[in-house]
Length: 121
Image (tube, rainbow, N blue to C red; front, side, top):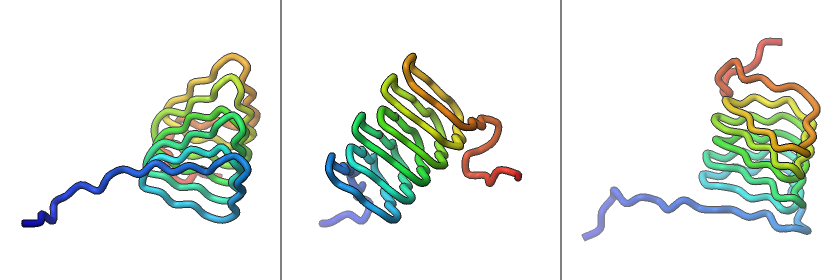
């Protein structure tokens, strides 16, 4: 007999070095970016930006681990980790922030409200 209550396995997605994607990416699993994303990236899981990864646009996710370059708006429900090789120019909305020595962060960080809320102008 088949069961209708089977769990769907979590998928890990990889955008490889040398790949450029323009547009919107929506994923239910984790995403690792070693290439370039220009647009919006939404994930219910973790977003990892590798040392060679570049994102220009908006990131919306549960947690983020950034080693590459990010420019735009970043909304993270839980922890944002900026590794020593990261370069971030962004409006960052997150619950928790960890920054390693050597990381460069330019912009604004808001930890005062739920990430899913629209900030007051």
